[in-house]
Image 1: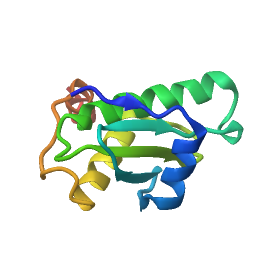
Image 2: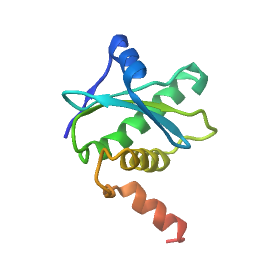
Image 3: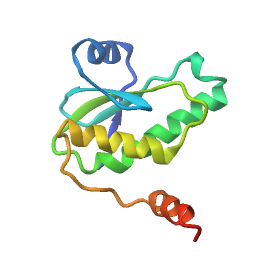
Length: 126
């Protein structure tokens, strides 16, 4: 399932005012109902220079894309990362999955991802 991008400031502020928040160690997700699944990423200048901010946005979009197919009903999402020394795709993927499961927006299942398999094999020394 493809998702739309939220681009208008009015939509983002409306979601911030009326949406539900869920927190994890690496990011905050604000979500609310919608006709179609849509997502926006909020990354300000405190996260670093433009190359760093763009990388964070790419990581979050890809991590969300993997879980978007598993949503039970259309929602609008705003992903707000927390400032950290290092940003990891695997961490974002895991945290988004935890939040979606906790808020019962998806069934309790894991996405298939090459990155997760690679990390497991890298930890075992394979």
